[in-house]
Image 1 (spheres, rainbow, N blue to C red):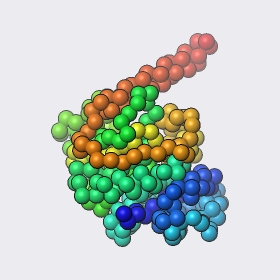
Image 2: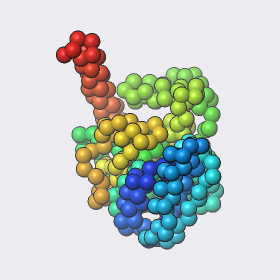
Image 3: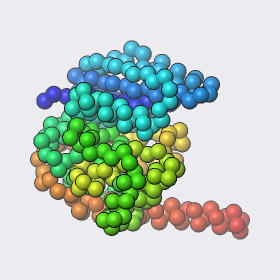
Image 4: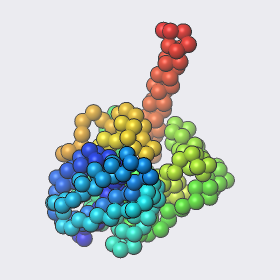
Length: 303
């Protein structure tokens, strides 16, 4: 099995970047893997320049990989353009890629899972990607399973998959509406993915991930997921682009020793898991709304 290169995207968070690299270095396949780091350039202010400089100090003399390449951008591309152009570049050179951002701490078996998935499903056009994260649902899930669409917290794909990425969010939104798929796209009205896509279209966010999900979803492609997450997001602290505060999407424990066996399974969406994830979204939405109501009551009435 020829291992996939790892594309790591970093910007202005030195502590997060260091933790992400340290976890990757502990991976069982790190010493056999090529690491390509894309360092986005600073915005036009002193704080941004200092932060980017601190991050780049973390990238000097990285050890523990087969090879390390650091690509330092002069200008600030922003998260979406950085990932889209960087993934496209690696895909053109290697034909496949494992993608991480600077706030994703991985299990030491993360690279094993990703490479095994890439190798097992490389010739199955129904499968568009491999993903290392799943929401912290209470139910016990299958070892691996498929969900329709694509995802963004520790993922991998092949050239044939990334070729389906549609840059134009307006085109994706129009197709979802025309085919009456927005309810399914939103996990049966439990998570506002359509709203996120609309906001991207109207310039309120610049999410590449919502376009990746929509591109795969509209082509009826599947992504492989693990029973337990091999990825822990340490960036849900308000420091990242498009991040949410709190631990809503993480378990309390980190993912250092989680291992998943990748085997041949039926190539179709697991509807039971889809309903479990929808229910997870629904419950979280209920309690978030209750909290908002409580805060409003406090501000309005003082109790």
